[in-house]
Length: 476
Image (cartoon, rainbow, N blue to C red; front, side, top):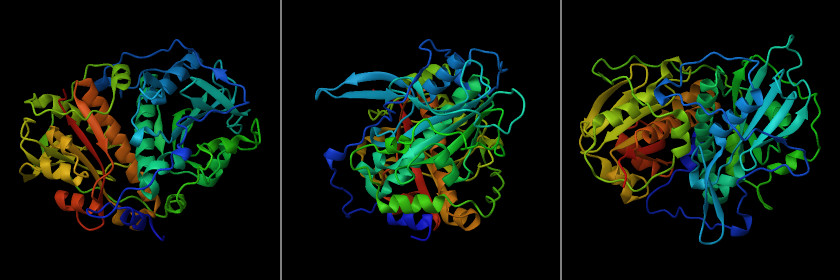
């Protein structure tokens, strides 16, 4: 494999070709990483969950470094990746719902945090366990030791355990690993900001160095995103000279007895680990025919949206106030003009006849928060067929499509652009999930589709690929 684009093409689904794969239930992965034999830091059970309306959660409040930081970190970690409810199934197994979705409910993404000079916490590197709501210290000491003074420093890391997704999805799993990490990254950014942390996402880092710093086995798990929470930025280095608390920590990256990922996943991740040689392309100017959307009004709290969010499939054909849908679209755009990766992913909107919008394919421009019709007609039935003939999708009011010109991106920035695009698509999908939940609408993310048929439906040029689709609308 010579390029990430080649991986995208090799893992495309095609109609009338066998896509199913035999699942070895003896290797079913554990969806939680638990460091046994290492002391835990019990986070406060009483959380400081904000009631900030979703449409205002990007407004950064003041931050007090002398605040109850253990409680603040507990709240941020919970909203990012915490357990919201538990369901006891008929087979005796327990299913844990979380604040973010995951393809096949396999949850390959793990959350880590590095702290220094944080009130009430020891300096070091920690792993967050949503099952126990604890932090496990992996390194204890001044991990940002070169920084002078006593200013707090907080940085988060998101990793992906490849086998958790590959167990079910095989070679295509790397796509889902990145989309899942994008969902969690958006949760983390929003949760951090409503607590006063000026968090920013960063996809560019030394992969080998960070994997070693996080005590990972790079053949099983790897860092895919870092988020600068407070007091740090891209140039702020960490130091792996602070020794880990145990030499056995990489062993905990194994999610099952036989946890090897397919070679295709390891190969494409190795390609995406290369540092970008160039810059992202300049975004073309907005369409002059675009219709500006109203300012989104989503008074439901961000906490309620994250806790209630779930994937829904029981869409119904029912007339709806189009404002509920334009609020979702407007919220997807909110704050995007300041995003340095804006334009990496293009957002399309397929509108159904009962959506209150003009039926057809629209282009959503995040810079102007505007919608422009590119092709009239009702394409929902065809879109459902593209999504592996899942007929229930035809009843949704909208299909949001996230696509990227992977060929052009890779030619400019190298294979790492594949990672950029899928992470951004996951982040945008999480935006849609939260806004739909806030407006009492259903939502469901779709990462499995007939790739070539999707490109034909959306009129994508060669080299441009659908990455993700989100269905939104009223449900039973």
